[in-house]
Amino acid sequence: MSWRADLRQQLSHLSERITHHTRAILGTWPGLITLALLLLALVTGSAFLARASREAAAQAPSPSELAQLSTRIPTRAAIASATATKRATSTPTSTRRPTPTWTPFPTATQVVASPLLTPTVALTHTTAATHVVPLPTEQVGPHLAPAATLTGTLTTTQTAESEATATVEPSATPEAPFLLIPTPTPTRSITEALDQPVAPSGLAGIVATATAANSPDEQMTAETPAEGVIAAEAQSLPAPALAATPAINPTPDGTVRTALVPVVMYHYLSIPPADADIYRKDLSVSPDLFAAHLDAIQQAGYTTISLYTLLDHLTHGTPLPEKPVVLTFDDGYRDNYTNAFPMLRDRGLTATFFIVTDFIHDQRPEYLTWDMVREMYAGGMSIEAHGRNHVSLANKDQDYLIWQALGSYEAIEVEIGVRPRFISYPAGEYDQNTIDIFRSANYWAGFTTQQGATHHSDDLFQMRRIRIRGTTTPEELLRLLALDW
Image (tube, rainbow, N blue to C red):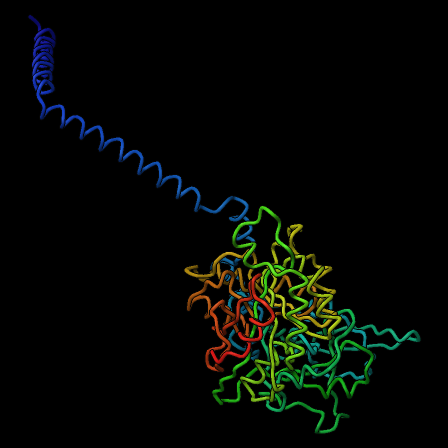
């Protein structure tokens, strides 16, 4: 017999023995129980693996989201490459402030060509001390402010039709990087700088030249002789008036203050549909009820103020009216424009609208359009940030929060010409990392959904509000406004 035949015979015997013993085991109760437990463990493990796979797939970003993130968030390699290129092309004598790695570096030509920098004022000065002029407004925040003075020569020409044209000839000095930050000014507070009329278009800023012809009172005191920022309206004003208006100063004066100012929070301003869920019903205030709210607070002697006025009081001690109140709206629903805005405008009241920018970009029918936002802004309302897509900002990494912070203010700034300075955390969800990123992106304060009306100047990114519900009567509203909480 060959070795192959012997091997086959041994395998056959082994198979018969295994079959015999298996039948013997399965024929007993312990064997059957063991088999059942093995099968149960196998089925349970398969179910857990399938569930974990589905959850992982649901949490993974879609290809479109990955593509959007890749185009909006600079990679570390791209940042390092841009920094190396910038250093290689700069002369040893150039200086600049430390800047966040996500801050854009526009050139002199790009600054003048920007749609936010439209020269409409007749200027006849020509000098090397050229400054970017942000547009101060009464109800809203400041515009772009440079971190360093733009070096070069600006020439503007007045025509017979009172139209101005401008050209910039950059000097040999390397172009300075620009930061989207407020520039401190020791002699001006927020409300003083905002106490000027808003340009009808709501669009921003011009480039002006400071000359020696200005009196000492009209010249700014900058941090260094090479730095200085002046502010002015984008209207036909004489050149000395332009140079005399300093930039907004959000820098606290060092005194810790506490203010009891109710900041109320609305959402929907309409009657919910019959099939609305519990959240839609709870957050919906009917137009008639809202009108009763406004009439009640006016009759009780309350005065609506902006968030900038509140911040100026906390950081500089600027006096407030006797009974101040701030009205805010979250999410940017379309009924805020069709129902709330006309009532506010007709009564001479102001409010702040925290908008979700991507929802407006996507033209969702239940949300505002940019034309509506521009009209509300021109009508005296403040427009601030509520995130890009109303996703929780808690437990997110740094790159994602930068994408949210910069994307929100870039969209608002491009569309209406004013940079938002306040963030309302979507769904009230945030953490310390959220605060750090939005503060570094030069937001000035953050608003939560925590109930209360007391604010502290040393805790500006956890400011409280009072939630208004569809069941809040005018009497209940006045009771909430009068609470010391």
